[in-house]
Amino acid sequence: MRFSTRFVIALSLMAPICAAFPVLAEDVTEQTIKAFSAWQGRGQVFETAENRATFVGSFSGVVYVESEKGPLDAGFMICPAIVDIDLRDGTQQAKGRCTIVAKDASRAYADINCTGVHLVGCDGEFTFTGGTERFAGITGGGPVTIRSSLHEIPAGAGNVVQESAGGIIVWPALTYRLAESAQQ
Image (cartoon, rainbow, N blue to C red; front, side):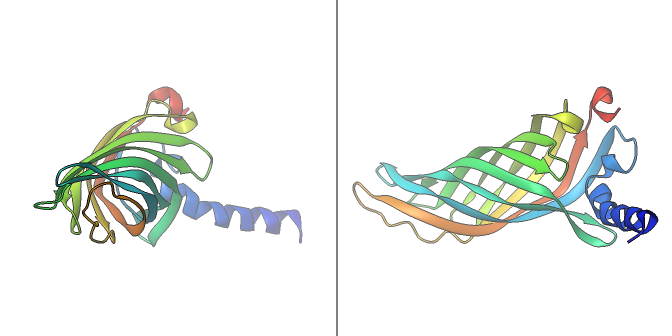
């Protein structure tokens, strides 16, 4: 294969990556994207009070950014999280910290907080707290919706249950701003 043919192929393979996080494709200080991830999670459920359980674990998956050409793989995320569940009415509160690693190994860090109903899901806020390389100084965030396949939690004294679950996390309008120095 000649050099020019390899160069054209390499450029064509880079196009979806550049479109995944628009800041690679153009010089922007603020961008709003739609993104989602089908995730898998693992952790433990502990009885932490009468009629209360707490899930401690993490969820991870590939992050896709919606584009004119459909969803594009933008990187990988992992989020350690804690979910507090009221076993009487199923209400839940969750919080966690996420790391999103882009294809070029740049990292974006975020806090996630949400409330909802067990077995239905959680709605809340996703807030960027910093980053590395091209995401250094990232700020912003937006609404987040999390749905899971986590099943009924066994109630009873002393329960510690290993759990695995899957689900989806959706960012319908995730706005981020980059520090000028990170863009250069």
